Length: 194
Image (cartoon, rainbow, N blue to C red; front, side):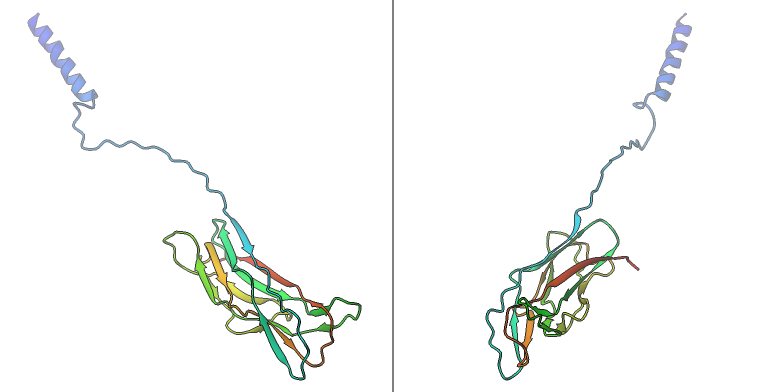
């Protein structure tokens, strides 16, 4: 009987040592958990600025260039989570009188290149979009490319700063007196990556 009890006890201990992790001879225990998260787009947006007034200008005997600037910096935001790049363009309508005379003057408005582009926020990603326009350019002769991103450099949010005198108006002796207006149109365009 003692032999049977000893044999049963020995079998029980052996069974427990093979099936219980405490007694198992294992150098690694692996567990896994899934982490689920949904990332939503942070948006694709452009904030522009009002333009300072040129004020009252008197027509002179010579061609005279007058300059003004933007009241604030521009902000480009690309937090779409896509690989697409972007381009920022501007165009303008010809300078047109607001009275009934219908005077129109073309190629008299121009824009200077950006002074600076800075990344906003705290990130290790430090690539910046590229300033494209490198010299003063007429505004009412089609879209003017101001800046663009390449190879993902436009991911994030950026401050675009123009110089103090960024918008220029050429006043010539053949212009007519009156109140004039031109409309600037800014476009932030999504561009597929190469």
